[in-house]
Amino acid sequence: MQPGMVLESMAFVYNDTIPYRHSCDGGGVIPSFRWIHVPPQTKSLVLVMRQREAPEDQQVHWLLYDLPVMPNIIHEGGMLPEGAKVGRNDFGEMAYRPVCHTPDHHLVHYIFTLYATDLPTLGLPEGASWHEVREKLRKPREGVNNAEAYKRGDNETPGPGQDAMAWEWHELGHVIGYTQLIGRYARDIETHVPGVDRSL
Image (cartoon, rainbow, N blue to C red; front, side, top):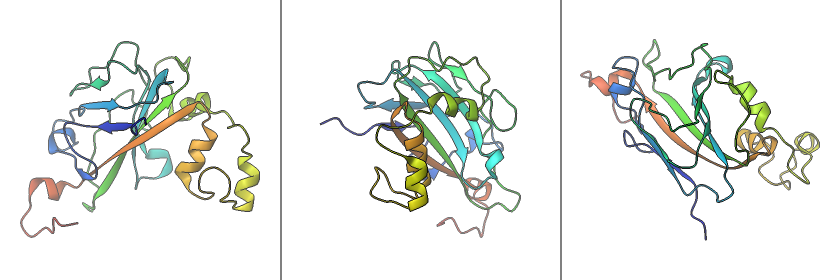
């Protein structure tokens, strides 16, 4: 049995604090990543970093596409495998926008989603937006009428009827697998300000 697809970082583990050096308060260094157990039919990968609590038009901080299956690593600092392309984030930058604290220093969460696709390339130039990447991945899944199922709230369709990630999955028919790595950041947690509750 094929193990589940995994995205991991040498900088932090799932739902752990992203280190200061990778933040806007530190050096803003891109963390290292590697992926294992991708589906055998995978032709290329897409990696998108989103901030969960941000407004919808300010969520995407980093976007990569046409990532090869091998080599299966992004080194710290952002050295990319040959052929990989950098997209444009929601701030108009073809770059990694570091994790950052909010003005009120609330804890924020960053979701790194890795998509395995059946496309050797998306056929996009560098600097494409997440919307443009999604459009290239979009293809109806055979036997699933998403619009009708959504109106019915039909949980008998493949995937939970009202779950946002499930609907994204069903709309992106060129995606054959995905996995997520979640990190969190708050400046006061990282800099150990006295009196701050770090148990959250």
